[in-house]
Length: 252
Image (cartoon, rainbow, N blue to C red; front, side, top):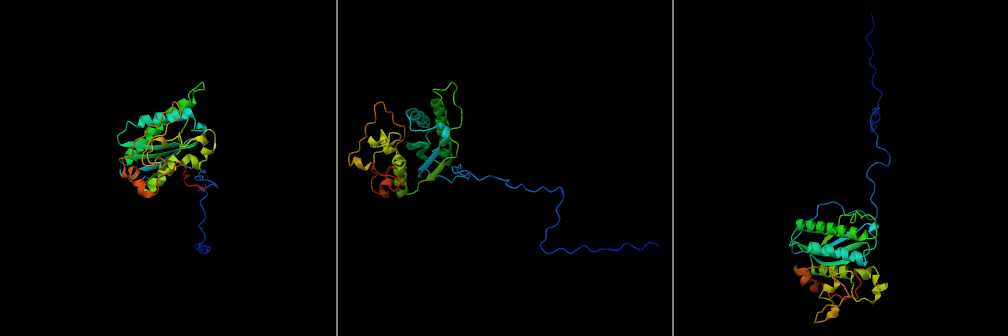
């Protein structure tokens, strides 16, 4: 008669030890996963905050390196065409704009968050179309590549001090990038690649504002007079009148 099988207890396992892995269990490959973003990554795709119509917005919009220097006559004209396009909107207004070599600064007013998104989308589409056409003038085929690779950066302005800083930053940004040290710009009083000529609050105007005369055949960017209190009168309460010689955020 066969004896019953003897039960062998399992070998004790130390506390905290991992259970044996199934042969077909996948292991993460070293180095897998989302790669870190580069030094000029896009604006994070978080939901933008609610926008009150009383608060203007400072927008920064970058272009791809293939577009080249934006501070050229034909690229200026292309961006000016985009200001003409969005000027037809009732709920979105560009109050100030400056063109730097690799990016644009805009001060805009919008009725709400949806109007800001729609207005910026319209401006980007129009600017991209006209810039691609301008860049194709000496090419056999029209350029159709990306112009604005990143989500634009937007800062809501809520105080007089912030409004003064934003206007100074946008209109005098060329001095921050030392464009005023190169020819022929070293002879300029204001930046003609911006809407500075449309700003009546320069300290140099004194009590009788007037507009400086631009270069021959100069067509200014089409911008609106501000409707928000912060850009119309509030910035005067945020500090001294803005001088054409101020260098924003710079140690110069």
